[in-house]
Length: 394
Image (tube, rainbow, N blue to C red; front, side, top):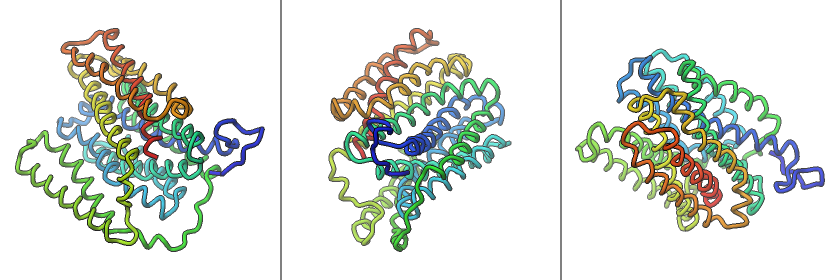
């Protein structure tokens, strides 16, 4: 991405040339694709189970497989972008994502489908930090970066929210279309990206300081954590198996901390955890994402399996939230600069509370108008909190 100088012909606010704006849209497009892919598949799960004759245990791995790849390798993906080149990592990983999407749509059994979902999660674990790193190293800290991050984070949130709607529509045609749709989008991004993203600078040999041992321990710990959480409901949270896996996670994390404190070029500088804004933003994002994504996942299955709604009907139920997030995302950056990041984070998280309280009263098939206030409140909360937490963390 170019560092364009501000001129009267350039867009006000970000100070970007036309090429710079296209580069920002390319990076936003990749994050939009990640969010879109996650939620579209969630809406198609009942159809996938029926068509491939999957058990409930196997079906959850269609989602968990992606989470394993993404959560387990996200930190390593960020380090790879720093050492191997942000542009290079972004393009290679997006290519892998495209191929895995195509293979997922052609899968004939659960094993093939889960494998492609894991690969897509791994690819997203490399594209997301590479894209974010390009943005944070391009825009100056303050108003300019806040607006860019607001657009970027809002785009990702919009992809997740609108993916539920598109997933419902495409599932009426066949669940495989939820896998095929990302293919042309990724192809378009790959066609444009090399022309607008700056080439990576030459490295001075620092790639030898990759901290392979640290990367191995933290990635193993994260993979094992996600695996343990997804398997605990089946085997029991207090079972010997779950407790042993938890002990192994603790041992791996302890080893990672010890390694990072001793190696000359650590994967993570643990001193950054002294930053109250960084720790607070991560805790806020943990509570927000865990509740909101979990609510959407469980609700889409409940509406289709128990309440008898069609995929399209369930998708339309989430449409107001998707529209709110899409409209609010690009505007949060300037608003955060004027009002304050902390105030917007608190406002967003607070709005979630009445939304979830209203959702608790649904014990039978809900009417759409009764469901609408819940979706509007959650859409407002997510639209306010998600972009602002990203700004706070970076």
